[in-house]
Length: 345
Image (cartoon, rainbow, N blue to C red; front, side, top):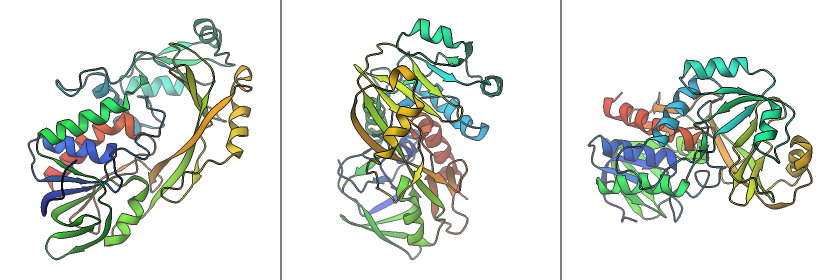
């Protein structure tokens, strides 16, 4: 990675997908003087790499779906030269629900392809997925190559002059006409600070008197011993939500739990194992759990992500609160954030 410079036009705090996508989009628009600061020793080391790596275009409401649908389209057809291999596979996704009409209407509003599918059709097409309800089939969803996505953002940004500095945690920020960011590698002065700190966003805001209403919530993932081959992602979006998605010769599964936790607090809660077994289809409840971990999804004031200038601090811009949609939405989030930065307040 890069050494810490003395000055920057834009200092982006956070080297996850929110920060990297913003840096890439700024550089792609011809903006120079961009520096990314990451507190860990590698980029995309927290929620950006510990999630289930799914591209799901339809989200929970129209505000979110405006970002995820645009992001999913970008991931399926990235700009020339961004990556040498596909970012999304072609396995598709099934959203299980007893009431598919609202989901189908939302998909139509955002021009997302889908088709009705019955429980019997799911089981017949993918043995091992014995489900008790049908729903909608989304052929353009799939699993994301996180390494390729990370490399595309990082390499593309750095080729255009962005500096990415790791082991550079921000400990203090002062402002005397320009921001002075004290990091574990020294001091960086910048015209604008972009907060893309994920679970640490509230703590960053507290350093400068900006917004602090960010809530990290922990979600568990479990690696199960079951080979479903080329089966799709299957996600029950009704009450007692759960999903499974093939992962090599196994399956990743989640009970879609949400437990408020402190930034970086991702210890496994053993009680969630029982919740997962109770929610999964009966044929999957006895599967061996080979590994368990947790990651954090951060929410901004209970709504969609906060992308834009802070209301109180004129030199502070947010790219935070991606609520678990960071992988799919990141390209669209980066483009929106870069546009807000270029336009100014």
